[in-house]
Length: 505
Image (cartoon, rainbow, N blue to C red; front, side, top):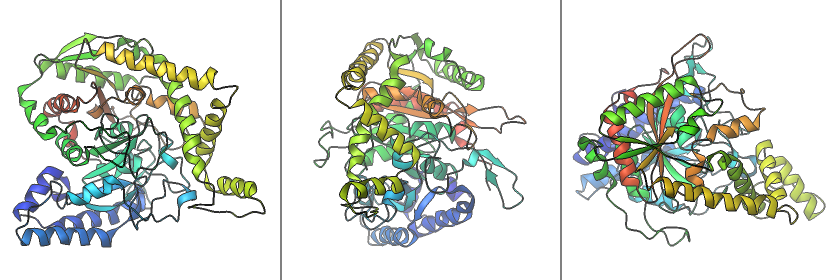
């Protein structure tokens, strides 16, 4: 297990020095996948042959004395929304269940150039629509932190890992891979990071390319990373960030040294101002254990020298409604391409319209259909001004609220999720309750700001709930990822939570 606990940064250095071979590291993680997958269901596809070939290539480079990339030999999993040439890319949907893309995403190409070993594709809510990984025609992912005794096998969990990047979070938490990529449209990297005791980083919109990341809501979608420590998040961002001519929204700003920012954690937070929006902490449904952990995290930041300041976010209460109008409108447009005539599933009927209808009925799940219908409604000519147009105006007001808040502080702190976690099925029949689980994370997507969730403690176990992780959420101004990572690294250095191991064997 010691090798499986090693960070990406330490693994890459050990492989570069010849202290470990990339093949032995890959084999150890593939063996871990074999052990966990009958119970966890985090992987949609394991690419063992390709992974070992990539590992052997790294070992051959080292033996020839060639320079190695910053992620050389590091085992990584990709959410099944990133296009991978020759490997399945299903987006957790029947409509793409048989699709093998003829090209690779920018993310897959940059990881390969950095020497990373991709172990496979990770499970997700269908088309990234969900907060629990239950919106899927496949087996839902289990949270390795929710383990209970199981007479039919070594362990079982009936708790969700969060979503939509729940497979990515569960795989990293269970030590099946060291790093994973996810996507974050309204919190889908940070919320599962919170529920699985991980670091979940969503950078500034445009900081990482979206080319080859299957679209859900294009103006809100971000590529993000899941890791067990802040330094690994910085390392992954270093590899992935930078302008991409294949993405028109990709930023041209120079990429700073993110690892150097985490190294400054020893200096503490003297002179750093952390904003707290007190009204958000009065939300109904905020778990008492989450509030307790958040207050403890504020005490940690204050002890490190940070100054806590009150801020106002006047339009915070409208963020969830605004987000769901905008994301469903964009989804209804983006998902129109799945019509049975170009790629993916085709259910042929006598007419073109009947083929469209039959294909989508067979290929899309209930949540995807719900969002397409809602998005189509808000874009209708007689609804546009009342819903979509108004939501766009409120989005601008929300972005202005954050800009005004950052005149008073360097980062904004809140809980990541209002709950430590919940059981499979608990919220599946209540879409509104599921939507509200992203209440603290959605604002950063609407404003395009960098944000991170880091481990902040655990709930107290009881007869009705096991010991479950809780996350601290931090938002920073546009392109202030170095400051965000520095604050997160200070909190991590002062707390033990990131070193905890889930109870699954």
